[in-house]
Image (tube, rainbow, N blue to C red; front, side, top):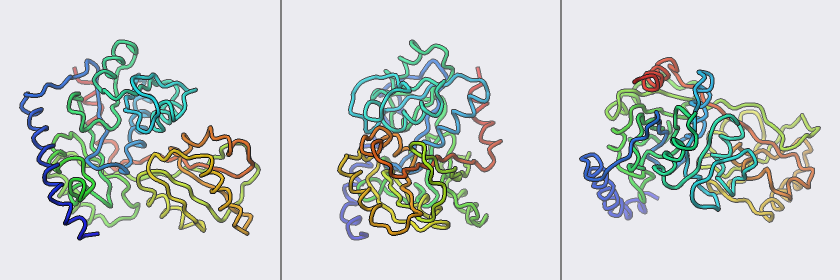
Length: 342
């Protein structure tokens, strides 16, 4: 693997040079950026995915709703089969709007959720057609320099921080590490609960070279929820089905309590009926009756309408997650100061 990365490194240098030049042209004003009229916050990353943006967007949505602020989210709608701008409805499907936007809408029905490839066009649509929205949350728009958000929150994963990574294809970064200097806040996500403080401090000091506001967050795993009403309440073994960027933290959490068999699919994987049939066959191979099929909430967005599952009595469950931010008071002070500024 190291040898392959070495061979790909010259391509990474070329790609990094292109993104560096592009960013410079935006920084100097040669390329123009549009600034939304409403307060706008980007939640993004430097890597190709798996850092945990979605629960952090959810964290901000809940904070604003609790503060009686009207909020809208704007996403590309990655993985959807449609194009153009769409207002997400509770009746939408993941094929129409993507799994993450649908998750936001189903969890927080009162908010406006919009998908559009052009973040500028989407932001203007929200300003015109959703006038009550006071804040626009831009999901995964850190590299969309055509739109300039008022505040940039960058997420980087504890186990794979951007400071130790390289630009694609030899690494997982979409642009060079210096791109992190555009952020106003950096959150180091998926931090182990009982990690030694001096090691966290060492990582913080390295990240602070790019941004002075650095926080740690960790995942909170919630109770399993069934796809449909089901009697099974006792289980000791799990057939885990995931189609997300990085299922490792979830697996590590579950393995402490359960016997796990993991079927891992690509990020945003679109499950077919044949896939579900094969998953059910795998489930049938277990002798132990204390077994369930468990997936993530993002996968549930893609699986909930599957007819093979709906017409079966297999015990499908999903696990919602949220996040907890260390020094949440300090983090929310930055957010509130921006939102309440004139």
